[in-house]
Image (cartoon, rainbow, N blue to C red; front, side):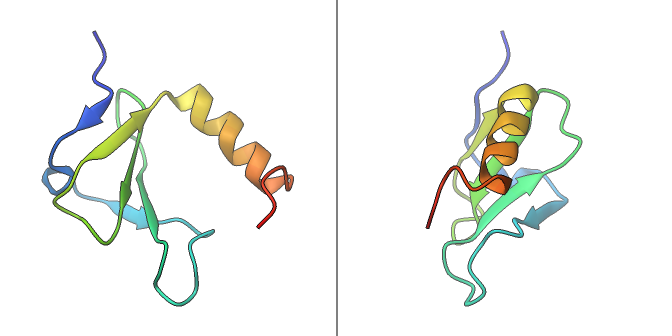
Length: 73
């Protein structure tokens, strides 16, 4: 069974801030590239908190939708 969460996201290294996060350091989403079982996503304000691991195909579909403007601000 594939894990769908990481209880303490600080155990992983290499997190990067999403380019769609706010410029004022608020609402920051971080992702971890090249993770074997999907794409971990966490709140940058809670680095020791949990991360959700999204299947790579679902993450790709989500990013494509964001880039095409399907989620207006």
